[in-house]
Amino acid sequence: MKDYFRLLKFLKPHSGILGLAFICTVFSTIFDGITLSMIVPVTDKIMTKKSIIFAEKLPPFIQNLISYINSIQPDNFLRILVFLIPALFILKGFFNFFQDYFMSNIGQRVVKDIRNDIYFKLQDLSLEYYTSRRTGEIVSRITNDVMQVENAVSYGVKDLIYQICQIILFTFLIFFMYFKLAIFLIIMMGLMAWPMFKIGRLLKKVSRQLQEKMADINSLLFETVSGARIVKAFCMEKYEVAKFKTQNKEFYKIMMKLIKRTLALGPLTEIIGVFFAIIIFYFAGRDVIQDKLSFGVFAFFLTSVFQLIKPFRKLANVHSINQRAIAAGTRIFEVLEADVKIKDTGSAVNLPIPNNEIRFENVWFKYEDENILKEINFNIGVGKVLAIVGPSGAGKSTLVDLIPRFYDPYKGRIIIDNIDIKDVKIESLRRQIGIVTQETILFNDSVKGNISYGHPEIDEIKIIEAAKKANAYDFIQNLPQGLDTVIGDRGVKLSGGERQRIAIARAILKDPPILILDEATSQLDSESERLVQEALSILMKGRTVFVIAHRLSTVVSADQIIVLERGIIIERGNHQQLIQKQGLYSRLYEMQSL
Image 1 (tube, rainbow, N blue to C red):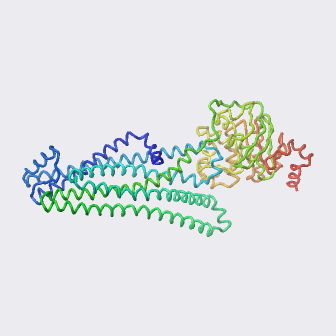
Image 2: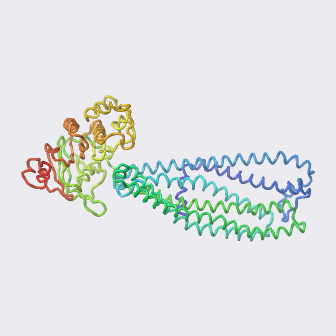
Image 3: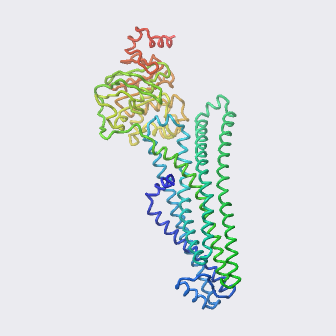
């Protein structure tokens, strides 16, 4: 129940609409009882032309009403019912409509709120969260899991309120009409509730497995769709199909397990209800035979008993929906309650434009239990270029990821002009850093939108200037709609070199005082690389630049070069100094010069 009430907290902002839905539900239930009670006068006064007879002693106002109805001639009463019954059903339909409308509205509002909350939290989480989880799994939380919660809110809560009102109504009517049989009713309700809670426990466990399996399928889809080129290049279509079939079959098995348990609830509650209804039928039927009860009241009474079974069947289905929602809700709360490791402190200030140096002081970083960087110490002055080189896996990209606080070191400090970057506002820090990575990230937007990302209102003239400096404007002009050409998911409509030049133009347009280039020219042909290097040389003047390069010919002019191996700085100096040391840098340079 604790998990369920935690889900219901999403309803709190919409309590006003929920109140209106509840009022409509109460009136809808009342009119259910009134329309059903028409069985009594229709049967007794119209069909059998007899007086209405109740077995129990009734309150005075009801006795007076029945006496009045009994005094009306059947013909006259028939005329009254011709107008009364349609009016009752119109009112009932009115309240049913708004009950469903308000609850559906609440369901959609809750879905909107949860998705907004999850997406906001995902933007707030550090990169460490993403590196430890699959993309498909994260997307599954905001799509499939949220839909399960919507079912519980829009349908589950509606039915929960409505069916409980129905149970209260028909229980009251049955107690009111035949108090002597109330004990059978209490036993029946207890026995009908038992399988609901028993099977419900199993449903929660199976539902959790189902959500996890859906996340597996989503992850597989993301991998194969984004990696379609590789799949086809290695002729792995049959392998991927077989893998998907396996995942899909496992999902089918879990789903059928869930369906089997869900479907079992309905017949179980119905069988129990019918068993007790027969007992009630027997005793009430005896009173009809002995003229202690009119046939119309008997029909109304028996119908009320069967109507009482229906809410229990519905509640069994609601319980199933709720268990699935609780399992999905647990996964949603895992995201919403995830620890935000990279965040502003209460005393964080805006970072001024750097005018002195950036310094790493005894910086250590580890991922899980493995140290990636160890005892990193260096400083670089403003307007200088620092090159970071070393073999793959040495920790080069991780080192530069610490500067914009994509990650935080677990030991040591990163200082900009004597200010620890943990003491400044993250937004003010990142706005002063431009990044071009080896893995080019572009969006399914126009060329203009990608270049001006982060500066949507910037003048188009400046966009064109940035594109020219990045040697991108010529090929942009040849695109179908020029700057307005939509380049597809991850820039799939462009070549690798074109995508890289768009990313460089984006960094040029940002005009940051700190620049990080992680293999920024690796995807360019020789001529384009030469032109971009010239543009970058102009751009780097007066800026602090961190360059990661495997091609050492591109960093020979760097003011300082540090050589990383297994997360440790093993050499430092400029190009000539490192060549003279005859260490790792010298060997790597000679190998590339052959």
